[in-house]
Amino acid sequence: MAEASGEEYLFKIVVIGDSAVGKSNLLSRFTRDEFDHNSKATIGVEFQTQVLEVDGKEVKAQVWDTAGQERFRAVTSAYYRGAVGALVVYDITRRITFDSVKPRFSISSDILIFRNQNAAHCDTAVTRMLVGNKLDLESIREVTTEEGTELAEEEGMFFIETSALDSTNVNKAFEIVIRDIYEKVSRKILSSDSYKAELSVNRVSLDLSKQKSYFSCCSS
Image 1 (cartoon, rainbow, N blue to C red):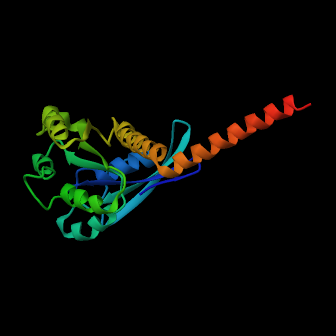
Image 2 (image 1 turned 90 degrees about the horizontal axis):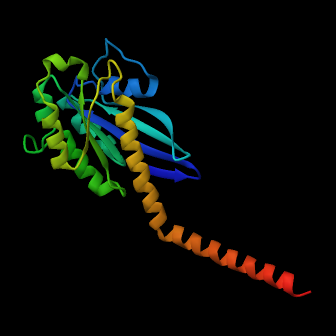
């Protein structure tokens, strides 16, 4: 969902990944600057909205937090429809959560479902970012930064490591995704036939205005 109305934009973004990688706390840190030490597993989906300003335009990000448990995937995958951005999250201290985002490890992984659904339902190229969360637990990490960078490059994704606990890079992660979506949507609007037609009408109006000014000043 990438909508533009006047000077306002609304983008749907999903946060996906295994259970307990910190998706809900990433969202609450971004939207409310809060962290819940007793956060419980998400049941189904939840979403929150955050408003940002990009290049002087108001951008509303509708961010959907999806359940990571296998039993909820059939339900949550339906909510990927219309999304134009995704943060694919893993826990740097649990390699299994990193392996689950690799397409070669599981053809039913969230990221593949997300890709397939958006191929049919999204008219804007999806902006994807791989997020290694829980950077505050650096001392017990199981996945190196280099591994995350390599996977992101292979999949054509942005990459960043974050900590929802101490807020490291959380806002930056969302802002990179939102700005990239905004730039894609802006380019699409600029290249659309309706926009070109509007420019043509404005150009004709301007030319007529110049002609009227010319006749006005020279007809006396």
